[in-house]
Image (cartoon, rainbow, N blue to C red; front, side, top):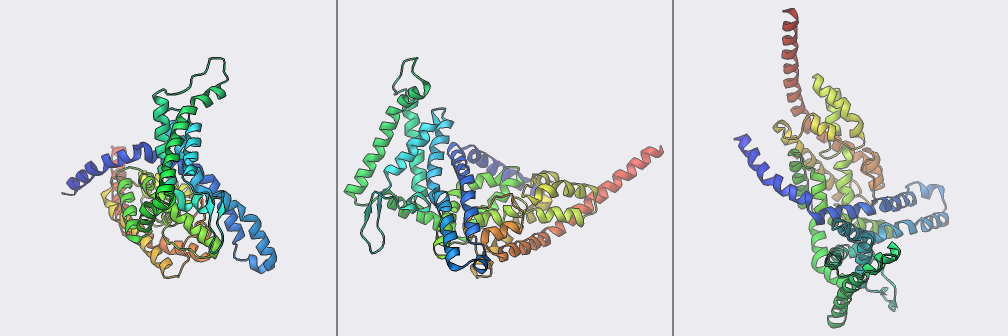
Length: 440
């Protein structure tokens, strides 16, 4: 009965996960977000430095304000305009995927996005300023429009190029010049499409595409993604996919990253402006309080339990091999060494532990016991406790991880002991067999 259930689930999930993992658009989206990763890390370091909790004790108010003002340009020039990098990345990687000139694909996608962006700043209670792009349009508020435009622009651009509707230059023309002229017609046509869209939307409907997409698509999706129930579902699916040997983190993140990253940007903008964080669920919530505790499934507690509390040679050996990578949130050694993949003995703790920790973390933050992540990007390889402090700008964020560590250990321990006893019995039988063969 159990094996039949596993086989049925495997037949349903594996093909779906395989298609998602190999989907062109999801792979491009994942690569585009990774393009922005080093830039957001730089901006995050500046935010952390500007908001160290002891600064007001060692600096005067004027010096502290000057220090924060000097560092303020870093997050604005990186995380504050993250949509720019994502849009360029989508255009670039989509074109590269189609084997057309990638750099022009990125540039055209970015120009198409700007074509739909209102160049008007309307401060509250003040006269509008023309030819100024509000920064939020290039950050969190413009994220979904940017992604849609980048994919559409990339598809139009590559379609025209692949149809060979380009200007051909003589053989003696330098390659850079030749490529520029080859991109002229595709760029002209693509940008014309978005110019016409902008004219219709602004002149006929008296609005702009940013507001249309934000109200119709982005706001509802972000509102849905910030809830605990969808988050628990995402955790559950991630664990199930990993159980069958599929990289659940990559697959689920490809779908959810636009929502989680948007929530993070909104958190960061609010934190820098007011010191308050509007959303609990965000990219940092997912990374720091799931992956940031030993890798997917929060297995650092599992590895330490194997090292210090288990008796079988196999489990101790796997624990020793996995502890080094586990400290830095790499857990493939334990996933395939215990093993976790396709091992029905640990399916329950593998799924329940991260869901329980996620729920405890959400309650702790929603009740105000622990501040939620500020939106600062923390490299996923930063060890437990340190990454919790960095993400929340509070010691409480690190101590919450230690509580979560204990929860994972308690849930896993009975199952690990059961497997350990099985391994000890097997090792004992193998030892007896070896002794018998030696004696004979």
